[in-house]
Length: 110
Image (cartoon, rainbow, N blue to C red; front, side, top):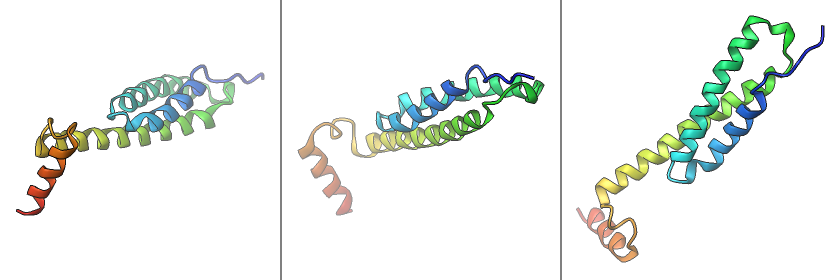
């Protein structure tokens, strides 16, 4: 029997890598690419479960899933950090270096 590759295994792997790399861009691109990778993973997993002997690219699919999960978690943590810092320090201080320094000194002196 001639084995074929899963249709989205490479895409899941690439999107998983991109989700980790782009998690530092305010978290949103990493979150989006990680979620897309997980949706594609679920489609290919159903194909593989229906007939495992027909497909040969399952290792790349699993690696992509793991990378996507890591990218989603890192992106979510980064996004939460940005939101908490924005609410504690203030959005205006996030862009002004001097104001940020003053607000951090105020927080330390409490």
